Length: 639
Image (cartoon, rainbow, N blue to C red; front, side, top):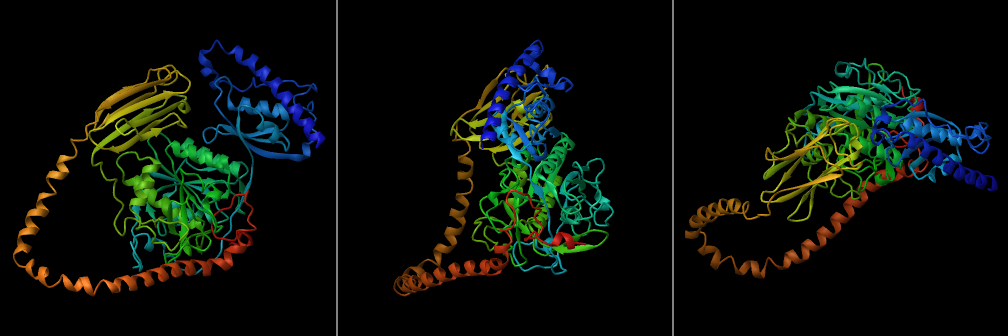
């Protein structure tokens, strides 16, 4: 303990020394306008500050803890416009020992460092560090089930029973990234829809267009396969972050998301599927959030722990579409996670799809449920004429789903089962009934500085908001609003230099029903614009004047002549004396017993025996691929 305390004191001292050194270096760049140009510079001049031992780290270059190195994911609070991320990360390794493994471009404002274990506590004390997490492992398991797949049949039905028919959605022009074990690009079910130039492997992982594990190919086949896929005409992109044994780490998953954000360009329609999971990781959640803010619709598995989805990542990230698993009888699969973080259910038990070689395999897991929804999301984007935000895609999925509580699960009330539209094809979003308010943002080279809000002045409620953004691109947010409302639009730049024009020609434009209300780009910290007026009398008369008279005139006169007298004399007494008692006794007993017992016994008996042992050994801090419950022996036996 004394040694660790001494090391922490030395770390604090080093922090102040590095701070002083950094201040002097920052002063050298003051001649450059606000330091923006320095972000484009080389890392050759990275800070290598000397310390009290005369070396380049706290131990003079000889770290007594060299054998105790660990991998950490480090995120900085703000971007430093006078130093690149590589420089800032190098300064940490120079101070505490170790080396930089990788630097993220967009997914996180940070890097992956290999450092002594004690350095985590030291870095957490630094004022510019937002988060330090130890990297965790990812792995996958599968289990064989019956050789029949039914998921495509179920998602085109409002209710059971199944009718052996399916409805495929058209995802033409949509990139679907499978962040997984790779994709067997030669499999007949996916070979014809593989994209070009969009594939990626994280450090130490083999070619993304191969998959000796099978899990990623199964997921890709379920989302976009020619025979087993929900969506047709996708452009499949293999993002390989797990090895042939289904193992990987959180840092690799974030690297995969970083690639997706770089590859999904302005105007592209993109969906990313993550059929994997871990214990709660703020870094992984932040990376998913940044990808969604960048316009990527991210669909994730809820997890196979028969537990609370909010305890796991990325399932707990609110901006991701989190998917739970169901059986062919519309019960929650015994292994599926549940709760407030669940957005939608989809078939996940006994799903048949492509596997290694040219064969197929039937397996279960929330890993299998997630790509059903990823395929639906791709179909919604493919059918949309305009760009849709990930939030709008989720709203569209939920609007096309079954009625609430179709799934037998008392632990996730109100969560629906995803469908293509209860048997119908995927339709484009319904036009706004009142007015359409559109905010278009074209960011400059510093998109993380830009944010905006739109408020309803009449009610004080927020109508919409956006930013900070993850990349230099064009972002469009469409909002359905009422007529007769005054709006207040505020756009801000956190650095205080607006969006135009020295560092990229950024701009903003606000339109209401196609009419431009405000546009520009040159301002300092923020600019506020008001338009419209609080006049709620305009929209009210039309609905009141037309619909009300018809029901009053037509139905009233015909029934008045004959039907009215009989019910007035005879029917009144009987309902008063006889029907009243029976409803009082009968309905009370039946509803009280039936609903209480049925939901309780049905989901419990099947799940209770298996899941109890499965979630317990599964280590919370380490990510798991969500393809079948107990991650124990299957990976080694999987063909």
